[in-house]
Image (cartoon, rainbow, N blue to C red; front, side, top):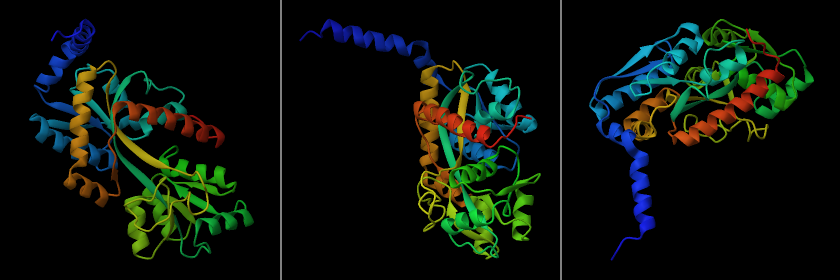
Length: 323
């Protein structure tokens, strides 16, 4: 039976579309891979090293994490944006990369134009915590208290534009309350002052906040993710506990330089998602206050654009000025 000409044409076109990129993906990698990440010791560094270790085993080539903390993410992003699009230089970072254009007057890269999304890695929801002396044991009670005492409640946060800061500003806007930000050099300092009763509430990282909730030094009201989190069994979401539609979480992801062949992106995506789906990796992430995600490149590209639009509006509405 003869194969129809249209089918022959389609098969030929498919082979041509794979072209050199397909051959490259089959042979890849032939040398070590570099993952550029944030400073050592943070969430981004931990996730990059976990993924790097898994990829080293799966790909049979050494995957090296290179920490670039200077510039608050700018140096790391620029390093990868300017690298050859050959799959040997990747960027593993959180939302800083796509939010910096809203927070800085000048950023030497475009998060959409200069990168090829590979996959989302993990999500890190915040925990809404209050000092035990605060007479609010639920999100509804906190909102009612804040409305009754406008400008009197303080919340602590670290870096301007970081997720704990933006999570609080989104809460203020959606709840229609006036709570005052107390700015600290680091999230750790803010958390210490919350424990000491110097501020009344905070949107804390999962790992840091939960430890103090278990000790009784803080009271947890809700988790900021859209859905209940495996990190906090039985803990309600902010949305379900009194503020419908509320959602806030840090998303960490992997990028390659723009114009990286689609076949390489696909190969990297498959291998990284397989690493994330491993039982050992998932357990290590959960123990560190993180939830494995994994996505297609297209799904994450859409997520990033949506996050840019949403948080860009929050930054503008909150009057957070570019520095």
